Length: 349
Image (cartoon, rainbow, N blue to C red):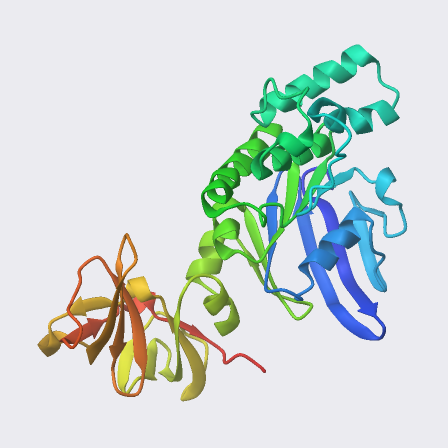
């Protein structure tokens, strides 16, 4: 049933500009009440995907379905979606109340009903008592809340957010990440969020869609994307990683950095070239005499909750995160348990 499964379906969506494909056969579905994040570097196609769903772009080919009905050529104002852009596009000549009420006035609602809905939105975005203020007198974070309230007051089924936190400072951005997630859960509507910030994606999302060069590389929940990246690009883009060239000797045994290591992966064949991904926090520092690898600490950087050490192991320099500091120049052993060694097919260039 569409009601229980897919709210939005993108089927083989392509988009070309002047003969250049910026989206290449995108297949994606979004469920009701889901917080989905499109994540990737600049130019990967995430904003174009968002604009196609919002109705601001038309796909060159493919189908866009909303509850099973094709909407590729339905204009934005007839879609049950609203969009919040990085540039909030508030009306500078209107106060906060009238900015939020703008869409309701176009619907010719009564003043009493408009005031009730606007007051409810101001409560939702923690701007009680701000209705008469001019938007130019607000901080960036407050302006962003007004833009969100203006979009939500029309009760869309889907809220599209195109890097809405990009203009905020780090502390406020982190606060707003939590507020947005809480807002989405309380309202029970679908959020589709675009960002290049992997921390934002990991913090807020139910589902992350990693994109690169107009393609979807991986779809999954934050833990799966982080713990089981589909390829070296995803591993490197989501968090920090040591990515090494290796050979899968056989199932559950991989060779890299001059040694052979037990792992939990299988199905790659025998003596097959692979990429090996190891997160910096998954490498344990041990005595030089008991390490699977041995290296020299070349640099130590204090990062607040841990130390970041670059350790020269001869063929490779590995990044290690540890709460215990070892001095620069020390010889140390490094151990990696099988579960923390992630094997993947080499990334195609």
